[in-house]
Length: 155
Image (cartoon, rainbow, N blue to C red; front, side):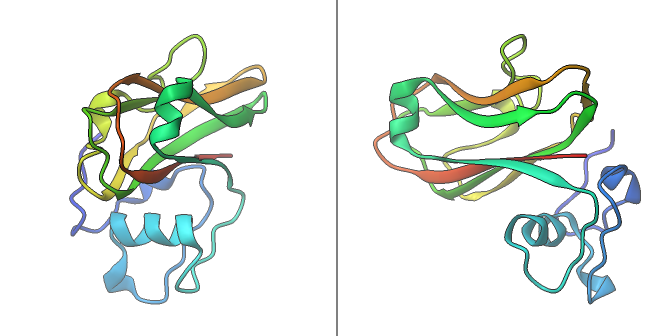
């Protein structure tokens, strides 16, 4: 799948199965603005047929080792995973997103930079055939600062 710059228009293929994304300004149809609208529900965008699982992350998450996002029901597909870093994490922090069988199935540690506030996305398009618990895993690091959230979009 091609990489999309945050300033270039987003091809419709990235939203296959997510429903129709409608923005009030065609010039703003870029990855960052659409993901921001999906996450925050701003700017009068409409998304049909999308569910999401979301969990906050902070330094206490690393002490526990994982954070539950929730259960993806059988027959549902995870289309997009978003790691949103609100304030930078220190201490060499890394995370992965996945399930018990593959902890980085939805987003690998290399898919985000927890030291820089931003939105980091992956598009796994993974179909779960059975109900599956999804988690954010914390394999590396001991941060004392940082906040963010992880969201997976499924349909």
